[in-house]
Image (cartoon, rainbow, N blue to C red; front, top):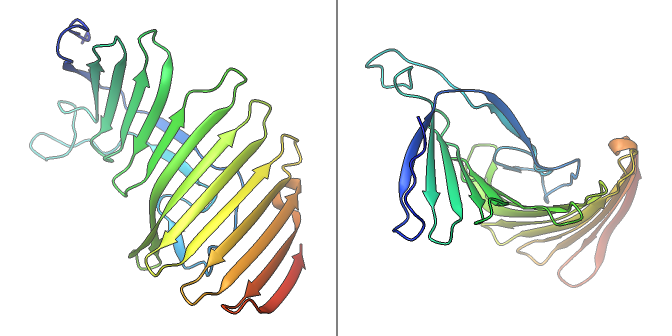
Length: 243
């Protein structure tokens, strides 16, 4: 079915285009940055602390007539195009089987601006247009839950992938009990997969945990230095581990 659009000078109009094709996709966000979050009992919804893999089947079950599930007469994906008064447009795709929504923005010249992917679990991933040198920025936010599925906090992950293959990131986990975990690191552009991460965990009782990790060979070898400092500034433990 063709897309019908109103002129940009008129009130923006939303037109619906049905996409009857279901397919499989995989969106990767992360790249080996790992680390403790001060206990390891909370996990990022939809992945680990590296950002995890965010893909899988975008299709879903099809149901018979009157079943209430998406079927041949009720396509799994719904696409909405919104034409802006400045000539740009926003294309929104909703997967009715998974609840996943993707919003892609373009400027008046048709250039990609950014894409926002949202899932029902509260995770949002924004991919921004690449710079002239090929550098791409990402922003991911979401919910932290304990092993029982209870929400214990939120996270924000900023990542920059350089055009030459290197990448950097900064992550902040904020917990309901007042704990804050902050980490930043980098991965070089070599095929060895060398990376380094430094983190700071601040506990409600004033305890501070400092950690520095370096790794090579894709995480096969590395060193981690962890220092625990009490509320009075006294170092209560200082350990270095190699693997």
